[in-house]
Structure formats: structure tokens, C-alpha cells
Length: 292
Image (cartoon, rainbow, N blue to C red; front, side):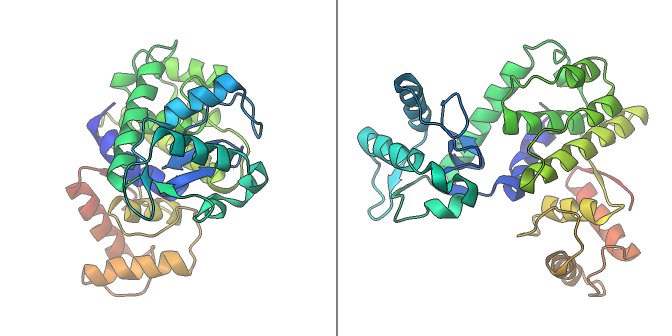
């Protein structure tokens, strides 16, 4: 993948997945941690594992350095197994999010450095699987936005996801067709936002390639609030959700950016001077900017 995609990866995913340092169940009942890192090899959603699936899951969990909350010492393998079993046994809590699994239900955590290490380890593994599949052999030469969107789909569904029409489109670099076929379900919550982001980035890949722009640079769009939220996140103006809603949180973060850059503090993303400074700051970070 292009270095720009790797550099942007955590910024892109943090608002979608959150950074969770303990074990929890995702909406489908899989034990997860970090930034949406599944450490669960159970084959079926919301189901107890077989003995082999449990063993494989514990091996996945063991790739992280788990620490005991109250003392900070490294957890023994049997403590990690006990924690995994405890979390998996609470399938009834899966619909309620990771906060349901905070201590004292859990008692182990991983530090941020290990979360980041594991994120990039998984990202590299996914890319390795993806480029070995039909239709993805030229992945290394794709526009950065197309790489980002496709890896985003992998992050949510695994690199072996089966979308034949999508696969056919990307195989011939038909980014518009791929944008129409990247949607996955359930289209709710952050999955809905991920679907919107993936579609938007595939369409930006179309624009970038048609204009002969450098494929290694990510293109960002400032023409609407959704794009401006993404721009602010790229500049590490957080916490902020990229949901396309011009509400109090977004307006407050726009004001924060305006204050830091000596602009009129009106909270409006549609302010031409604010967009111009946003574009300048993004360009300095290596992004290509549309809609300034």
C-alpha cells in the first residue's frame, strides 16, 4: 500500500471503531479489542465457539501483550484465556457496545503502543491476502483512495470478502462501479458511515485517476460537512465523528480550528477563508484537496 494510506489508517479508523484497550464483544458477538481488532475465530455470529475455535481465538488474543489492570504486570496465558471466556460468555451484552465490558467485568488491558503495533500487523496481513486474490493483483498501483476504501472493507469483513461485482470492477479500475458495489450490511451506526466513506473514497479515486494526479497521495474533499469533518480529523482536531451532521460538536470543532488559525470564529464549515486555510494545512500534510 502507499505510505500515505498507512500513515492515515489509524486517523481514518479511530472515529469508526474507537480505541478500546480491553476485550469486548462487537455487535456480532465476536471478542474484539484495540481499533476494531477481532480476536475471535468463532465461525458463526453470536455463538459459542467449538473447542478448536476457542483454541484458535486464544492464539489470536495471545499475539497482544495483556497487562493486569491493578498491578500493570504481564498477564499469564491462563489469565488471558479466562478473560476471553468471560467476555465471550456475555453474548447478551453484544448489542450494547464496548462500554458494557469495562472493568470490573474485565481486568486486563493492552497499552496504546501495542494496539498500534497490532493494528499495522493486521493491516499488513490483510493486504497480503488481498493482493493474492483475482482482481486485486494491481493493488500496489491503485490510487491511494481506492486502496484506503478497499482496505476499509477488509477491516470490517476480512480480506476474503466475496463481492463478485466489486471485484470485477476494481479488476479493470472501474472506480465508479466499485463505488456502487462496496456497500455491506447491517447499514447502521458506524457501518453506515464506513459505507459512505468507502463510496466517497472510491469516487475520489476516479477523479484522481482521470485527472492524472499522483496515485500515492490521498485526495480529500471539502465541498460538504462530511468532507470537512474528515479534513478536521486528518488534522487531528478531535474528538469528532464523521457523520455528515452539522451539529454543535462539528461547529465547535470548526470554531476550535478557526481560533487556532486566527480566523473569524463563526463555526461555519462553509466559510471560504476557513476552507482555504483547511486546504493549505492539508496540502502541507501531503493531501490533495478538492472543493476548497
